[in-house]
Amino acid sequence: MKNQPIKEVDAVILGAGFAGLYMLHQLKSKGFSTIVYETGDGVGGVWYWNRYPGARCDIESIYYNYTFSIELYEEWTWTSRFPEQEEILRYLNYVADRLKLRSNIQFNTRVKAAHFDEEQHKWLVHLNDGHQVLAKYFITGIGCLSAANVPKFQGLDQFSGKWYHTGHWPHEKVDFTGKRVGIIGTGSSGIQAIPVIAKEAKHLTVFQRTPQYTIPARNHLYDEDFIRETKGNFKNLKHAMRNSVSGTPFAYNHPSAIEDSDHHRQEVFEEAWAQGGFAFASTYKDLLTNEQSNEKAAAFIRSKIRETVQDPTVAEKLCPKYMYGTKRQVLDSDYFETYNRDNVLLVDVKESPILEITETGVQTASDHFELDIIIFATGYDGMTGPLFKIDIRGRNGVTLKDKWENGASVQTYLGLATASFPNLFMITGPESPSVLVNMPIAIEQHVEWIAQCIDYLREHDIDVMETNAEAEQAWSKHCREIASETLYVKGDSWYTGANIAGKPRSFLIYLGGFDYYTKRCQEVAQNNYEGFQLLKLKSIS
Ligand code: NA7
Image 1 (cartoon, rainbow, N blue to C red):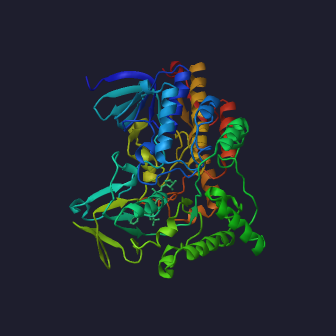
Image 2 (cartoon, protein in one colour):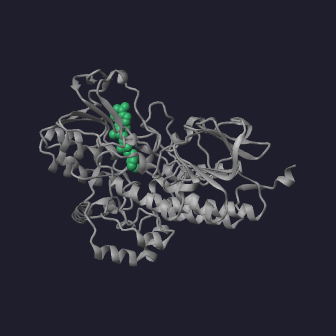
Image 3 (cartoon, rainbow, N blue to C red):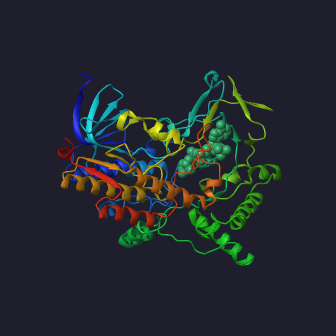
């Protein structure tokens, strides 16, 4: 029985986060039989898994939500500028209930493999319970940062305390009271968790490999007038976000940092620093294209670190020397201030690398640190990692991992599809702009394009849709050319794959702007899906 598909549906969707939920809603509304498989036992995706202390979104809540429904926007009220994980998870549960999505979601189910069956022209999807499901369309909504990276430190299995990865945080509260805690990693997750844990733990040791340019979030509660005004302005906001470069209603304020006067630039940076959030990144248009402009921003942030951290030696260790913004911008709440606490110690593991985890703590080249709890805030195998965890095979049994040479030669068309993998759609796939765009807005664009496309295929009796190799080569080339004109490609980050030992270096984000990308996708659809082959089975047989 287990060798026969237990059911056949129009579409299988992976993941019940922002992407999977909206994809399901769209396909259900259009009458397609659809099932979502979700590994967790609830909806939420990244917001289901990331329950670490201090976890919150760094895009403002009034922008970080769905905009496809005015009812959803009006009914839901955010409490603060940067909502905590728990509030976003509640929002996604509200959406799932409000749109009656749960009956189409199978929780606690991992998709192990999906193979394109060339005789049936359908996807055979293999579940972890041994069952198989047949689907015409296979759609991934598994995010770009869902494959956790736990570095292979020798000796982790002999550690007698508890250890956690921020992206797989337990549902029950972890009690740090009276504990000696060590945290490895100072990206967004580490920087959010460190100030919160420091307040609770007996002692916190921060193992930092690379310091960060982090900006104060300046989180605050919203008042009723602001919420009323924002909801009243929904249509304008939606239009501004969907037609913007980054999926938020902001544009760059000034053209060039290096061409501005020292006095005015200082004022601009100070104002953005006081405003908090991503205002700093929007100050000058050339921060990520001109090294001298970049250094102006970097120097300003370093001066703030030196002003805040009392111990000059610690302050220097916290000052990044690489180019600003080539790692994902981090927002914090009292991060640098935390190093003025007596119970917090900063350890530079570039200077003195971690050699092993022992039974009682962490051994670096110079010292041993006794710990009760170790937290890995060590990030993710980004972009390709989530896709490579699944055995996805297209024509001739070739795996996605092999086709893309383990990430060295990713090729997609619009980040949505890839040749030899017919009827496969990726939401927020590599070579789409999504990870540098306000994610829910990027997701809405992808989902609406895919849903409209599937509807078109049904309307025109088309059974198989597949990207042309030429179309994807052209798109990938275009992506790389644009990226090479920026400073992003020079950074060591999950953007480039440099954070994962042995991962080929490549930059897999489309940087031509969300607005341009949206227009390009629309043109492709309007031109009857140019760049794709559309086949009718009748004509094949
Ligand atoms: P990030 O941003 O990838 O940060 C991971 C951190 O862990 C970073 O400081 C890394 O240092 C550090 N790291 C990774 N491996 C090691 C090893 N082996 N030893 C020491 N330190 C290590 O992940 P986050 O979870 O914080 O954030 C991910 C995204 O979520 C973020 O960009 C937002 O989009 C939301 P490195 O810098 O590589 O030297």
